[in-house]
Image (cartoon, rainbow, N blue to C red; front, side, top):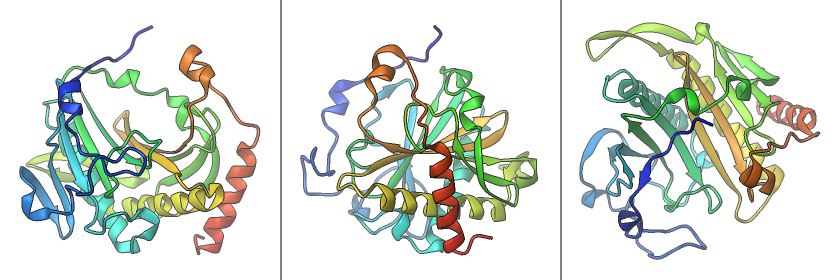
Length: 276
């Protein structure tokens, strides 16, 4: 079986600060001390993109996107304008890295909660450029297919009928309608339209709010993963629980029988929130 594998420098990893409850080793949040941040690449108000101080994967270029100056908050807490700004800012930099010619693969993702693989509670995302990893090994196209919940401006939200590892995974899929040609660092490139990214941001916010209210767990965790599939954006919103042993040990995926129910419940939630 072909796989992507990369070295993880445990010497660097042991030095990382941890502020998430249950794995905490410091009370000082490194992202709150803005005056002490170094290697800042770009900003948009209280949104900051900078080099990751703890580059644990070799070879790679790791960046951190600090989403807000409000520590211990989460996407459902943001004003609508904030999550839209975060997504427009993050997607632009992700596509710039994809088009830079420096990397074979670039990943863009978010960890939230102790079961997500994250270490810092302050809201942030990460972008990582890999010069050698094969992008075609990072997903199967079927993982983004599912029961349609909502569509607008070339953006579809669905419940995955081929989940990667677990339960109630949601996908956001952009079609050709969501894209337009634009100048990107002096080169013509296809970028998602601002209106389409705004729809994506709104759907991310409400889907996460729905999941947190539905599961109501004190240590609720989730990931958001972004993918470049044949030049088009896909996103997967995945609640995190203990990973099923069938997947860990045998690569057997579980498909819950409640998928249609989860789709209908989220559709009702979106209608109540004014999505037409």
